[in-house]
Image (tube, rainbow, N blue to C red; front, side):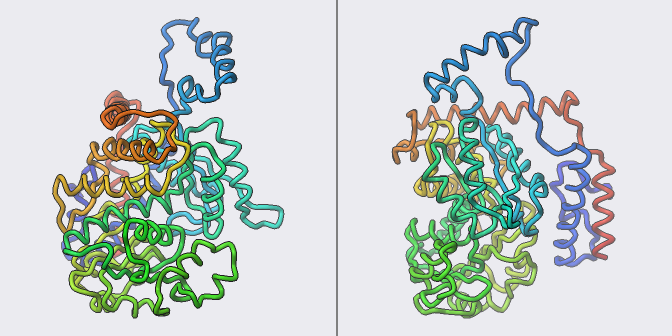
Length: 484
């Protein structure tokens, strides 16, 4: 047990030598879950609010509050856009969820999503230099049904206090209507990270994976397991980036999406799925294993595994098959099993495996870029620009089959991504203000450094305590016992 360290950078080395790869994978998952429970209880969550201005003397209270602040209120009244300068609105994001589809755990009740939403706020601050707050809401109507209109109305009411909205963990089909309505009717960016964020980072990983495999995006055949918000948006972005829709086949729990799916055609709530039914899978393939035959890429965002994607399906794929198994918290197939089946590149949504194509490397930089130019929305072109920004950043520093996208500890990727997104927002005509790429990069870099330095200093001076070693050992011992 002495091998484990507080950095948690050696997890593969701390389990018994006699453990198989499958046992290690299971034990890591259990360890991280148990440690998360203990750590969140120890810290009482992971986000707090602290002042960003000083109090040199008593009369400064009269500046930060009444009577001095009256001038701020009347100035904003005359020009609402000054709120981006005179308050924290210009760097403030609301993370909004009804918690109806939290990770792979389904409906967790509104407060059940707080751990994830606080996590988004944590990553925005530390990785993107963006302040955020978790807002988990009860979207049920009088009939006890989750009502998308209630979320739409709630977000519209929030607009005056925030520079952007991050939607999260809203189940389909409500997620489609909520996002599409708010994107058009709000005057600030509304971003659905499960859909747009996952799609952006998946596209980034795909760009570099097919480059390593020597293939072209317009020619590859793609089999996609799962047709929720994530995979349907991934398909849409791949097509927008040059993918051939006729070479793409998506599958939901009832089979393949194609023009013959009258159940989808007749349900107007699933209009995004019906669009893909009309554009993809012209051969009307109804079994996923059949779509895998000769496929260059398998992208799964479906049911947590580890046995959802079968090794025998991968064996039937084309030369140098690429497998993205991105269900959380457990991928549809473990990387070692996919590799044993012949996969050339394997990516998951988890950071403890190689090639994490998780939206955590996307949304902090994307939202920072949108906020810096006070964008009115995040366009699909901005999401694609972010994807290519991530892919090019990784390629510049070197890519290989075990390293196709940047990781969260590559601090410089976020200001680069933010600057690229900001430039695309200006190009798309959705920015309120303009700046150069260098200005955007330096602004983002400064704010991100501030956030990281603040956390470091709060820890060094004891305002944030280090996690006790006993906490790690208890979680580790428990996970080993459960798997043994």
